[in-house]
Length: 287
Image 1 (cartoon, rainbow, N blue to C red):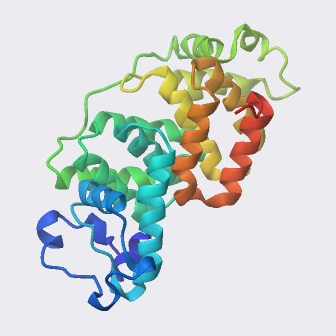
Image 2 (image 1 turned 90 degrees about the vertical axis):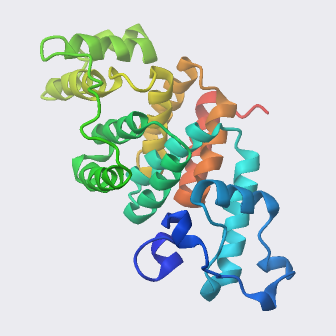
């Protein structure tokens, strides 16, 4: 992530500026032009311009941010084969889980600049709730609603729910079966003493309330869950379970590695390497 606070020194990202604001701001250091470590690559420059309406970098830390921009917006883009909308939604999911509120706002504006659907964005945030908790999601929703209003997006958005209080458990359980197999039907009966209600919560709340919603397909929702868990850290057993779930849904080893590659700038190497270890353990490490 392009360090939102660091990029401006005034609490909001340089790249969150509107194009009009960015015009006329010259953060380049002419003395460093042509210097290898102070030159933004053409790919990075093009991606920054496309997403943020500016490819200027702050002169106070020019070498650092040039290196970072070249890595995050050139090398990482090149080695993670994801389409633009998919990449941006995955990044938003990760920043929700970390959480990184200022950077989320920066990337939210980039996603809207790229014409990512507001409904898809909201669904990414909503689905994070059973994984990262309401405290994080509430902050992210507040930011999102503020930006949506600034962009003239009418709220509330169209409803995407498909379940009722009466059928959410059954629909959720069926979704678990669709992802993980028929063995999920007996999971509640196998729950340790005193924990049956937690298993019921998983079916009715986690899967019934969220996975069954419209706006995103089931295959992508399972990929998002992998992103939340990887980005939080400390949930390695669940990461492995959802590696298998993703494989079952058609998100193969190469896809999962592409997602981890895209997340490295946002979650760092320790969590990324843990994720790759989980992928190798479950899917094998075949090339």
